[in-house]
Image (cartoon, rainbow, N blue to C red; front, side, top):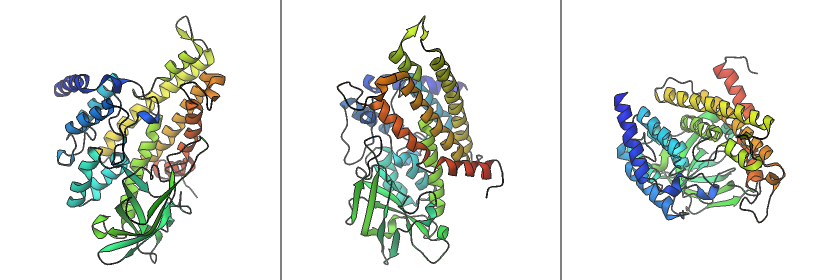
Length: 394
């Protein structure tokens, strides 16, 4: 404990000295999120400096090995870092599907060359990744995917399409599930490939959501040449990689339910919208609903931390990611509903002269998709019932 307290003091001192003041303010919207990559343009010099400083210290991926650009921290030290960033309101220096999903899969299944090539670039925010999983006919039944990769000796030839590919039009590389053997049971003929989105034959088309904008695309592959060296894990055993990555994806989506220092507290948003009486929120019922939400959000954060520790020790049931995904997405939907309730008619603004530009309404509508993407809530409840509660599921 004494050592951890020393780590905490050093961590806090470093953050106070190195985090630009602008990076300790709440996010205003998507424009304030740093995704990195070859096409990335920083929104400010402070955003660039914050990423560079954190990456140089290995703190964009604090628990990854130092040889791959990580900080080499223990899980306890990494937890201290997260807590201190939260206390100071530090923004995440880098959001990345490479960090959240691909990185853990490469650390487990990648060979030495793949780790050395891709992980440091992910840690430094040099390459932005997207995920090629769902297809027009393969959503919840992901293993029925039909995008095929033909073995051509020293390379694969990929043909097919993916859908709901987040930020495919802005990504540099894609990690992609493909069918390499159509003659065996569906889970056994899948492989996991990595390839550059600028490869000849790759194209994307945007998908607009009810919120008026969207990160999603449909991605098309026409005779895309992928070197054999970009196969992660064994041929036809990509489902093992996919399952690990899906667990991390569900953790990430579930994390939308966490109220972090990067966003304004719900009670502050409500106070600005409807005002205070005698130092408390003027609307008694809304005050109660926000209090209940914040209690549940705190409990969810503690549960998330506990499960994270158990996972890193190899003691957690893999299906627990479905629990976190389900509860976290429902929590975020509650948060957006409460923001709309606090805002009243003003929250319904879609376009106008104010600085909000329909942000509340768009976020509220977008949150509805949280319980669909990454596996629907119904699928997650079935997983929870079958694998955590051991209930009979037909």
